[in-house]
Every structure is written in C-alpha cells, then in structure tokens.
Length: 292
Length: 281
Image (tube, rainbow over all chains, first blue to last red; front, top):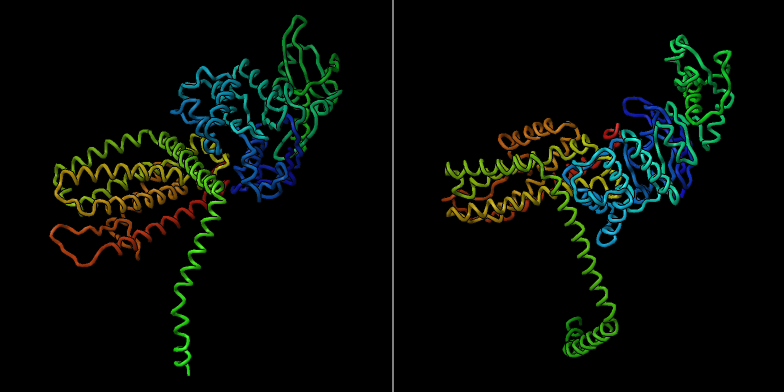
C-alpha cells in the first residue's frame, strides 16, 4: 500500500491557491503532516479522501488513480475530519451500524466489528448512550471507530487531538500508533508533540508547499547548531517575547531560561543545545515562510 | 403454376402438425432431462437469488430505518401537528366531502411537508459537519441523497394512505382513492427533488423553504400546467360530473412527465453535488 501525490495543486473558485505542486510518497506506517493553520493541510486531507478534486496533478492510492478510479479508492479509506460531525440522536452503536451500512457491511461481520471497535476505543460501556451526551474525547474516539469500521488500508485523521485533555491525547496517540502498524495512517496536525511521539515519517506544509519530507531525525537535524539556551533577566523578557524565534521561556532556580532559534548566538552567555522537533519546526516556520 | 404448386404442397403441410408435436415433445423431454441433470445448480442458483434479494432488501431497509431516524427532528413533529390542524380544519369546514376537493388539500399539505423535510437535507448536513463523513463513504453522493428523498417520500406515502383511508371511511366518496395516493406520491417525490436542488443554490434551510414554496406556489395558483407537466393534476371528477372518457391514459401520461421532470432535476442536482469546491471551502 502506498500513496503517491504528483504535482498536486488546488485553486479554489475564489482564486485562493491552497496547494502548490505537492509531491509526496507515503508508505505503510504513521505519516505526519505538519504545518500551521491555513497551510493547506485540510485541503490536502480532503483531496486524499475524495471530498475535493485537485485542480491539477494526480494521486495514486494503492495504484488507483483518484480521478478515474474513485469508486475503488473509497472502500480503502477511513476518514476522521477536523470538525467531526455526528448524529446527536443516534447511540454510539447505532452510529457505527449506520456508517457500516453505508460502507456496504451488514449482519454478523458488522456486529462483530462494532463490538471490537467499541472495545478498542474504550466505549463499550457507553455504546447504548446517545452521542449528544458524549464528551469531546469520547466523540473523537467514536470518530476514529467509524473511520476503522471496514478495516481500511488508509486512514486520514485531521487534527485528531485538538481540544482533548492530556490523558485523552496520550491514549489517542497510542491508538494511532497501534493502527499505523499494518496500514497507512496520515495524521495532520499543527501540534508537534503528536508527531514527535508517533510518526516515522513527516512532511512540513507551509503556504501550500511541501518544505520538508523525511524522517523526524532528518527534520530535527535542520535545526542543529541553531538552537540556543541562555539565562536572562526581565529586560530580555521584553526583548524576546513576541519574537518568532523564541521557542520557550521558563523560570527555574537559576533564573529565566530562554530557548531561541537563531543562526548566531542571541546573547554572549547563550550555549548550543540539542534541538528537538519543535525547535526544527520553528526554524522552518521562520526561515521558509519568510522566504515564501 | 404457383397455385398448382401450392396444391401439391398441401398434403405435406397437413402432415406437419403431428411431426411438430413429436419434435416439441422430444424437445420438452430433452429440456426436462437437462433440467433434471442440473437440478442441483438450478436449486442452488434459486436459493442464491433468494438469499441475495433478502440481503439487499434487509440492507436497504436498514438504511431506510436509520435515515428515517435522522429525520425525526422538529420538522417531523411540526408536520404531524400540522396534519392534525390542517385536516381537522378540512373536516370541520366540510371541505373534504369528495375526493376531488380532498386531493387539492392533500397536494397543499403534502407539498408543504415535503418542502419542510427536504429543505434542510443538504444545508443541515453541511452545517453539522456530517456531510464530510457521509461523502467520504463508498456509497455515491447521489445515492445518499436519493436514499433520503425516497425515505421521506415513503413516509409521505404511508401518511397519505392513512389520511385517504380516514377520509374515505368517514365520507361517502371512495372512488379514486388509490389514484390519489399515486398522484400524491409522485408529486411529493418531484417536490422533494426540486427542494433539494433549490438548497444547492440557497445554501440555507429557511431560504430554501421560501424559494421552493414560491416556485411551487406560482405553479399551483397560476401556472398549473407547464406544457404537459402538471405537478398538481387532479383527474378525479367532482361529484355530479360524468365523463365517458377514462382518465387513466391522461393520468399515466401526466405522471410520466412528472417523473421525467424529477429525473432532470435529480440529474442536475447530481452535477451540483460533483462540484466539490462548492461544498468544502
């Protein structure tokens, strides 16, 4: 199973170009699509899930062309959109039953799948309750359950952890990691931590273009020798707060510690530290978005 | 010479029937033997067909039930209360004393209900975010919309049967009640498809409802017939009027045109649904 995007572009009727000549090659495993809000992630997700048509370019999913063989691609797909709409009057089991029906499933197979999925997303206890009584985390879990109902080969999840509490977020990340073992899971997010914890490959989307495509370690390498930490005072807080290069600011027993991305030391006492994914993300955001 | 030739051939043709019967009997026997030899496959195919039909029916019935549940919202309750108020008024005012009049009242009521139930099919799905989930399923978008439209029409059919049975039980006029149900169902289907098409332009439920009512109102009150198309045709004769001509042909003719209109509307609707950027921007 693989997903190949070639020269993919999308221009909306209002003239806004959301995607510009995207080239991607995604193989089995968890793939992270990172980018700030408005970068074009959702547009790309919607094109992958056949909701939108690209203006130009091609997508091959498992060898099928998305324009000519859409009916063969759809059964391979599971999708959890960013704003997950649900039918409030249906119970969790009914909801899965309905969507399973729309995917052509019925009878014992469907019932068994629903039971297994409800157990996997820890919703068996509340399977008989209406969706309108569910919390945000529970709705996300039922959302991922519906995406998995026919055991798809490709799962697309758009901002799945947005609005979840830390415990739910960790559980959700683990669930996605587990799912990525034998299929492609494309995880779109602007939360770096989600990708850092789970993905073996990632792409960075900025202003509709792919600025990086590779492994997280390669991504982090881009910020080598450019990540600095130093202890400063109240004046530094004023100087650096609001700067796009500031990654973090924290207070400990030694004083106020600043973490900055910069090609040169931001202060004399600054020392180089090992970068992480977030540092690399900030580095790409600042340099590449300025260049764009 | 020709006539003589024909005369010579006569005895031969007279001897044909026994030969033909013999050959037919032989053919029948050999067919029976072939059937007997393949009886297993015939029975297996028959059971397979029955199983397939049962599975398909139960599958679509399940989707029908689920779709029906999704319609159990405020509009359905309004439709029910509206039915009690509207037909209560018809009864108390003695308007439904014959099927001719009743059909017009039914047209008004069921068209209003269809507009009420169909005006939100697309706008609500889009506003609630369920459109993304539904349209990413393997089932075609057009099939999903038709499934919803057929579900509403079937409920309208059930409801119209109840209304007509109620009125035919309490009034002296029972003639043409099944014709009324046929007319109401086909008109409701066409009204529903027009309303859904209007919703692709208006994009808002209330606006869709108002525009649809305007179009249908103009048709009902002023332009009852557009060429051969007449959504609100009433072939039931008023009491006391006798006609020697059977209305069957005109009814069939009229309904074919109504369904053709609905077909064109749905075709255009499917084209609208394919314009993806319109729905997800």
